[in-house]
Image 1 (tube, rainbow, N blue to C red):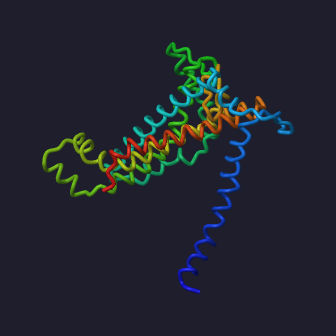
Image 2 (image 1 turned 90 degrees about the vertical axis):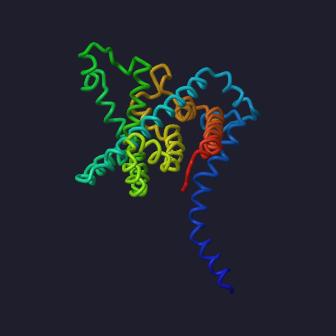
Length: 292
């Protein structure tokens, strides 16, 4: 047996477990969702009849689904901008400190270690209309704050909670990217009289463009899927569907309203939407990325 065949067998041996996991937990459920989206079925899946594309067509006439698309886009854009902006700003501040840098890094990384559901419980107590000290502080200055009845306030609470839980992820990558910038390059810019803002805009930010592109993709995926736990704990998609995202609507229609066919069609549309959005990002944003 040639060495090539020996290495091939070893490679297959180590790859096979991951392939099995991918097939069982990703490929098979996705294929089953696609198949089920073409059928009308009862809540238990005991009886079904062929529906064709009716489940998909119904989505275009469903006002709640259109609103879920809008809410998802608002949360996605807001969380991405907030987490990336805050992560970059804190990375710049920590990078400039010599003393206590490890302490700052440890404290700033803690929110990422908190599960989304736990972060949601913490913020639920902070923003609770009766018990939360943030809500009480806002009410003391004359602001009528009650996210349980005001849709815009509920959406704001979801965005702030998701941003707080995710900004550490952005901070970590930006901090690593900034530390890779050659120090002589920054020193030469300082000798030329470049201000801190000019050094950031013309040197630091362009050299972290690959990290920025990666974080844009990851934050959008996080906003689409990982905010589910936050929404379920704090608002349950309300009030008046103001915080119901595409992911939460898939769950609500499938496991609460007991509509497997419609929920499967929504999950397929969500998958296509995320794939298309990611492809657009690679098509247009990657052109501005500098890898060297």
